[in-house]
Length: 435
Image (cartoon, rainbow, N blue to C red; front, side, top):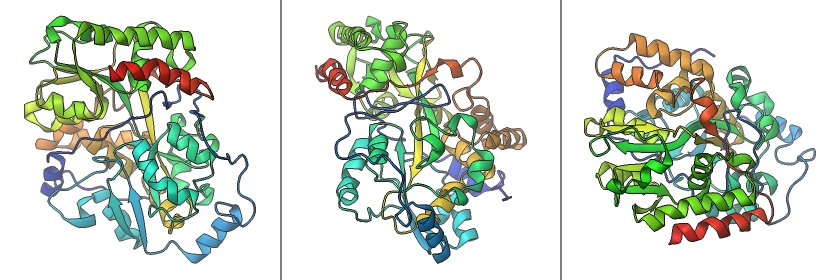
């Protein structure tokens, strides 16, 4: 399909691009869960899943089967669907109310006639999963047609317990034509049976150059006593433990329990040295904006967005350490008993049109699963004028939005945990975060 993008000279678009954004989210909560992608290597967080796992696909006529999807297509997509996502993860125009405030989504509504209720209600993978699990367990509609879940423990559990609908290959032509090889056939979902990537991003370090007068190149730099009381690390072992292992020359995704112990000992230094303001979740962003934090573990899009859109945060910087950083992927999927699965697939596939993929990238500054959208971002940056040009050029040239050959090898997968490893991992890291 070919669609006309929103013109960048449109004053409404510029107002939307320059309005204050919400913090993206509280990304992680489960210690040790998770795995990144970007095609770096195989990942699967099969971690302590309870219940009876579904080991085969649906039989003929069952939800998600070929016949079931044929019947659903014959009925049509329905006139309404519910899309539930993370905050600040879709393009916005704050000068418009209602669905029209999201230009890429409004274009879908206008072209298909399907009304969409969009909610930014996911602030944590574990907490959101807890809200829908009772419905999933009892075979009821969760009230969500599309949910966006990180490829961590919760997503793996939903797949293994049969809580997600297998996707219809006939309803994703844009995906098949435009998905990047690094997001196709991921190890956590072979064949993309259940998921289509929404966006991806990096975990590294952010700092305020008003208080930090040298580049931060190492996690060890945060131990400098001159920053004492103004330092934060994430309160999840997937990120903090992962960066600690990288500092020690250990590859997180292949690390053994002895390596985890070394990483835990490394992190304990921060408690012993008394430099930390705290082990934090998404609250770190408010803290650095308030200048309570000077240097902190950070997620790429958070810092890039602040730096881009708000002059008061122009002194912010983000980088992955020389030893490397971590990477995550967030995925669209359809929970069982969804009321409009056909419409859900149509909308998921809509964002694999490079035009709409580019609109997302130009808004949230995260890594897109649609490489062709990058060409549009580059062209838009070259053609833009006025307030938008600097924003678009910065996004187009960011190695954390379009990973360069120098950056991509530094982005690492999270450790795969299986069986009893989960308890060992948690026993090592959780006491550190509670100290």
